[in-house]
Length: 396
Image 1 (spheres, helix red, strand yellow):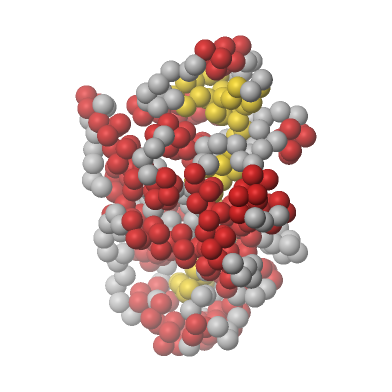
Image 2: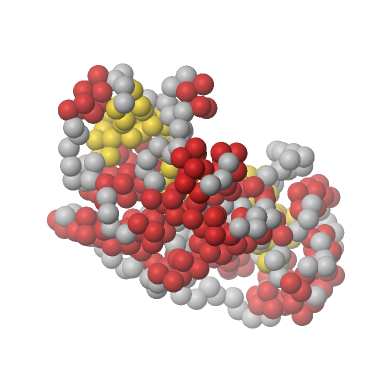
């Protein structure tokens, strides 16, 4: 195992530099804050969204600022050569190799942590008995779920999302001057095709996205949940992408695919737990929130484009606004008398998305009459700035 650990941790012997890596400052800022907390930091989110890169960037900063490289361990726990070793054995081998005493502080970066059985208990043991700052990463919410609550109070979770439009422009070295604001629309249309997965933004490739979706379906869904019919799961995902931005009928999908409503519901939860899709409940009383159909959104516009092409640009814009709002507010959609307004937040901001279009008369009446603390129609890419300003003002 010693040779393998040296391969994973080149900084033990050489100067370490994350070459040609674009930093995602908003997440690095969060991770720097968490360095001062005792809790385990769990990075989660869609596969290939950049969790490993963020870990490596924090390692680089730690070493550059004040930490002796020998106290920093990175390892990917899905490595076949480590399949016989549990986390405690790997950490003990690290201490032995680097001659680190038990009271000395170490920094552990454990990628693909869910590949290890009982990882919650092992992390709890390290947290409770060793002087260690622990970062872990996984791409599956269901695999991360802590049924025995071993890590309650001991962990902080940070979801890493695909690049937003501003990050997309930054990754491509594009700066839009105030006088050229009209260019945002063209770049947004480009972003819809490529999406926000960092590698694909730097080297757009349709095959890359298709392989990613196949990878998630095979490894995180069909293999993990022992589903024999892979094709039905793929067909299910195609139907989800075609319905993104709309209310989703589990019964309709079950009829189309010839599966039971219970199976349909289970499959939907698998896609949500791997961050391929997100579900939005309806605003209303508790029973309406729980029982009404949920709206569905793609986690990445490039993946959506892969399945449905360029039709209905309004649905891409609505999907993008949802992704911007997600994790900033508790969100719902508003549905009254067969009329829908895209979003309402738990603190009373009513938001309708229109891609260079206007509300119809019925929507306009509901929008104007509905009681809310703030209202905004986002009808252009340029107007996203106004939405961001409203969110920030209402946070204070």
